[in-house]
Image 1: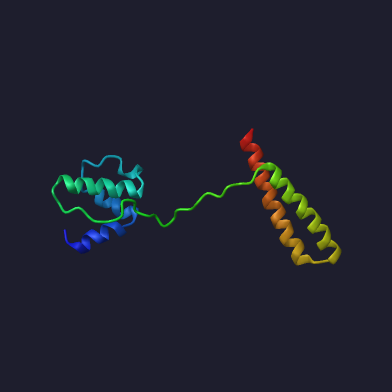
Image 2: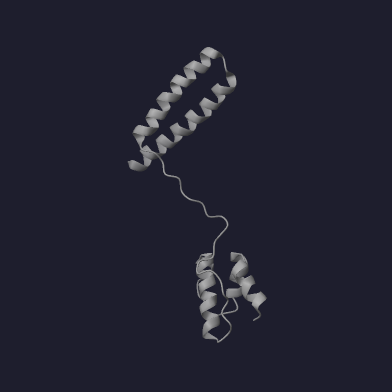
Length: 122
């Protein structure tokens, strides 16, 4: 395996890593593995067979990873709703339809989050 092939193994997508894992019958349950696990399994199999082991990060980074946002507690959500209610009254008095639309969307989003946190707590 050339140096270029080693570098390419690190950059492969999960689908391509699955195809590579099919070459090694010792790798069982490849479809249930994460990208990092696949990379490590292929690396281990290559090492067993005496092939050159690809250099790369210990953990392959997937492009679609997202951090989960923390939701505020119920008290903070209710406080946000009360502030939006007062802002809504001001926008109604000023007859600002654009601001009303923004406030309505935000109110709806916060209220939905509040319902979800209440349902998950029960």
